[in-house]
Image 1 (spheres, rainbow, N blue to C red):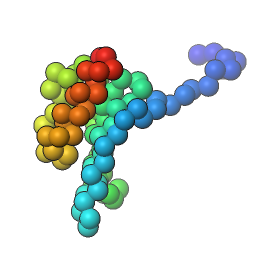
Image 2 (cartoon, rainbow, N blue to C red):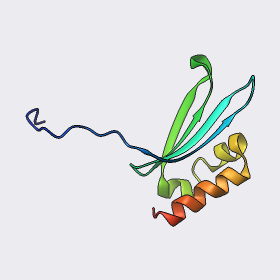
Image 3 (cartoon, helix red, strand yellow):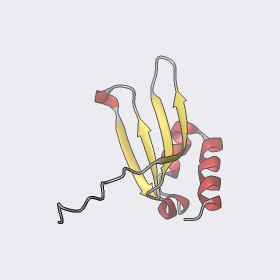
Image 4 (cartoon, rainbow, N blue to C red):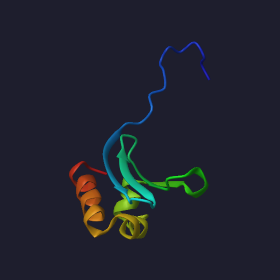
Length: 89
């Protein structure tokens, strides 16, 4: 590892996101990041929170689709897939 390298780490950016914030309930988020991952986040409080991710191509092959469908619905699932197809995997 070269510690003299002046290049700094740049965190992946959110390219697109969808949020479902249930009043007095859970908060769900799906987002697509610039490092070619799809992230699914669940929970409002630390004791009930969780996050998982998959690559764009794995998502298009079905990985995490059931989770997005269950937490965000068919419309969001369709939108995520359309975004990925339009922006290349």
